[in-house]
Image 1 (cartoon, rainbow, N blue to C red):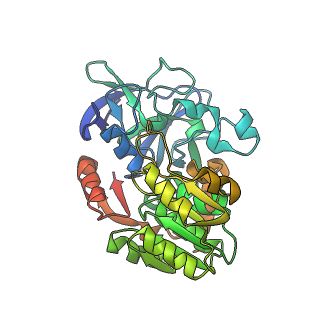
Image 2 (tube, helix red, strand yellow):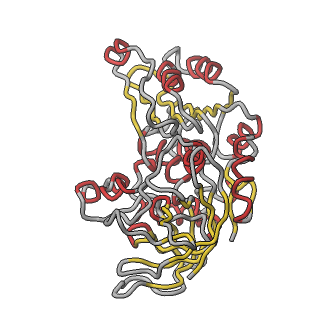
Length: 372
């Protein structure tokens, strides 16, 4: 069948909507009619070239939800009409990492940016109308009206849940919330700094508050985002990390934050260095945001790293196991313990993807949302 979707044809570049051919699902796959997709910064990294991909054109989008339209042959467990949330990280359930409860590190993740099927680098499901292969972001490409995905990337959810809200569980919520709860291991009474209040950072704020932190300090130069952070659990906000660092030390007898979570949209080494300096002895810096993934170097004191026993911790999808955590978070939303409605700032049509990213760069959105 044919479908429309937003693609980048080069980097640097911008998203444009084109018509493509979409294959039928094969064994172990489903075709999904998209309902909603979040506009995550990672897809903008594709357009800027910070994250290189395996093939162009490349269809973006990795945070979305929809309704199963067709099920591949000999594929039990799903049927037409099922509602699914995509996990941008697949989970095979068999590799060392999945078996150890670290599904976010599944070996299939090595193929996220190739654009082809995880198990077969030569196999694609999208092509241009003239037959050129089109890559799928994370194997799912949620910026398409219809998409074909592996069951390893789909989590079935209850049909009464609003898909234009729970789609956020496929990336932004789990990544931010887990950065605080899992990676930073926030405990009751902690002092936590979150650097950068976008679609990830706002959920790190939620996670830190949910874990019982006494001081949840949100840092962002945009006043609107600081105000939003106060609505979702922050206790204090500042425009820059120097002010936040000073405040954290004032409430910890000069020790500094128990953890600093770096969720800036384009992370530089200097940001990690600033976070490191704001962290107490035996504290943790969690680096969740991305920048140019080829950049090397973080300005930290080796002596301070060793003698103060500090830890710099990377965090992928907030160390979530999406097959279980997406369902847990959906129930938290149902129970009123996790806020999703408040995260969506502006909705867009598919043809407005580029405008959505312009608004993101202008600091207007916590999370932009495509509604199909």
